[in-house]
Structure formats: structure tokens, C-alpha cells
Length: 269
Ligand SMILES: [Zn+2]
View 1 (spheres, rainbow, N blue to C red):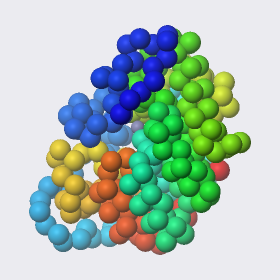
View 2 (tube, rainbow, N blue to C red):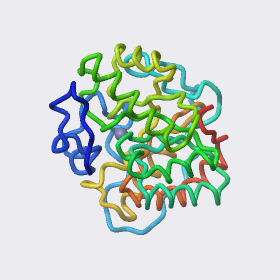
View 3 (cartoon, rainbow, N blue to C red):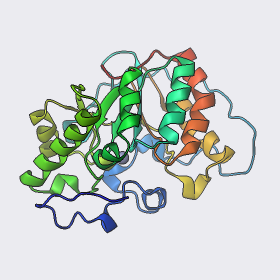
């Protein structure tokens, strides 16, 4: 993956900025990028080669999401509806497979796309928009320390990503921004506002990135399913990743019907 670096960000080199390599994310998750404390509890499903499907738990009856996320970001949909968000694409294989699944199931979602990948795969972004899903700016090259970059770099990064999206989809609405790894700070939230983008965090992290622990087969599907069925509540924003993650598509193939039967699923408006 080749990245175009901003002149003001010489350290944003291709060798240090590979977006969300699964192994790196699993090996050294940033504390501030970690899921909420509840998701850090010992998983109820241990890694195994079992193909036994997870038992569908009843939906949580906790009160809807109201608390803000880090930096004043948004954790919930603001209604009883639940939003699925898929990060780090576009990926010509997994994103298209996921779009096929969402179309089959009649579900709209939100895609947080990485600018440099949008430039490489604009046709996938066109399909996301054409099929009624919501687009979200997920920065140009997924820098973990984005919030520490200077103003000039931030302006370049967010603008370049929006420009790439609108080159693919002229006039596209881009009303949302998600910081890489969820590393929101008040300053990054303020920068998103300069672009009239709302800063979206999440309420549920399905941990699809923990492939070093759960692999990419049935144990991973069981783990992701258990978390989502345990933690999703009215108003939840669910974090997932489809880029280079066919196991995410495989998991949602069985999980989507459960989610649809328990919640109203929406793309962020
Ligand atoms: Zn990401």
C-alpha cells in the first residue's frame, strides 16, 4: 500500500502507517483505542476449533447510550436504533462481499473509509454511496497519533480524504469522522467540526481485530457474536472492520438476522 504523505508530515512514511494491520492491532492495542471496559472482561467464549454456533443471548435491556466518547465524541445513535459501522476500507474483496450481504438482508450501514484507499478503489466507494450507505472520513492513512499532528497536517489529512471521497462520488455527504483507533481528543473533535463532521466513536467493539487470539474461523465468529449479542443495546454504535477481514463478513452473515430481529438497524443519518 502506497501512501501519499503531506509535505508537513515527513514522519508519516509508508513504512510506519499501514492502516490497522491485524497483528499489530492485536499485539499492542492503544489504551485509548481499546474497547470499553465491559469488553475487556474475560471472553465467555474461549478460542477453540469448535464449530458449535453461539447461543443467541437476549438483547440487553440497559438504558440507551447517552454518555459521550473520548474527547467529546459520539458513542450512540441518539435514538433506539442501532448503527453498524465498518472501518478501514474500501477493500475490493471484503467491502464488496459485505455490500452484497447488506443488500440481501436489506440493511444500511456506515462505512468509515481511509482516504488513500479511496483513491485506489474509488469504484467501491461509489457502490457504497449508490446503495444508500453512509460515508465517514477515517483519515488519509490511519495514523495512530493523528491527534498529535500539527494543524497544517490535520487540515491536509481530513481535506484530502474528503477530496478523494468526492472525487469518487461527486457531491457526497460526509457528515462523520472517526479518528484512527478511536483516538479522539477535544482538539481532533474540534477539527472534525471545522469540516462539519460529527466525531463518531462506538459503544460496542466486536473485536474482529483479535485474530491473533481467535483466528479467522468459527472461534472468531463465536467471539464476535458473543460480544455483540451481550453488549448491544438501544442506541448502540457497533464498531467492526471489513478491510482485509473476510471473517467479519462471515460473522455478520449469521449475526445480521439476529441483530435485525432485536433492533432497528440504521445507517447514521
Ligand atoms: Zn480504523
